[in-house]
Every structure is written in structure tokens, then in C-alpha cells.
Image (cartoon, rainbow, N blue to C red; front, side, top):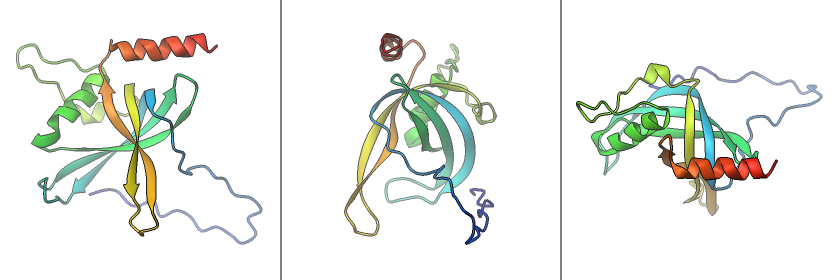
Length: 161
């Protein structure tokens, strides 16, 4: 289960000022460098299309070629239907396929502090309270080291300096 021990702290009526740190910021679609800030282990209770399974909640720090930055949370389901996404995530971190088995090693205890590149998209959804549409960021693709889109993003970054 997820560790929900952070309940926050009480604020005082006379606090004087407050930070907006932690507010949601929608990032534009594109290629971003990412670093894994945090991994939390959760449980997915299942759905009509997916059996219950463990779930990895990743907090990612992102930096775009234009200097845009922010934080995104991504969840990976530990299920055979989505094993390919787990493999791509670890490959984006630099883990290589075992030449004998053709499989990618998985080492959850090594992801924090490591990073790579990804393609971020904007996802539209219906708000649960029925007040209309909302938007959020979502990892569209984990990029493998050497992917040409990484070089293109870095070239854009270099030219903008």
C-alpha cells in the first residue's frame, strides 16, 4: 500500500505569507529530460480490463529543451499487460537487455536519482465533479538512449542559448 503518512501541518491564521510551491503546472507537450525524485509502492485494486497488481508511483523532475521545468507523477502497473512499459522505463534509465534472455533487468531500488528522456503529452479528461474538462500531463513514451529525438531536443536547447 502507499505510504500516506504525510498529513501536512497545521497553518496559523496569522501566518503572514504562504508559498504556492507544489501547485499544479501544466507543461507543454514535448521531449524532456527527467530525473526520478521518488518511487512509492502502491496497490492497484483492479478494473474491468486489468487484474489487481502492484503499482509504482514515480515522481519525476522534468526539464525541457527551452528550459521549461516541472514535476510530473507517473504510475506503472506491474502487470503482464503493461510489462513492456516497465521495460521501456528501465531502458530509458540506461538498463540494457540481457543478450541471452532478451529481457531488461528491473531494479526498483536503483531508480531514485537516475534519469533519462521521455515524451510528455497533455491528456484531457472529464472532471470527477462534473464541472467539465480538465488537463494533465502524462508520459507518452520513455525514450531509449540514442533516440534521435533526444539529439533534436538538445540541438534546440543549444541553439536557444
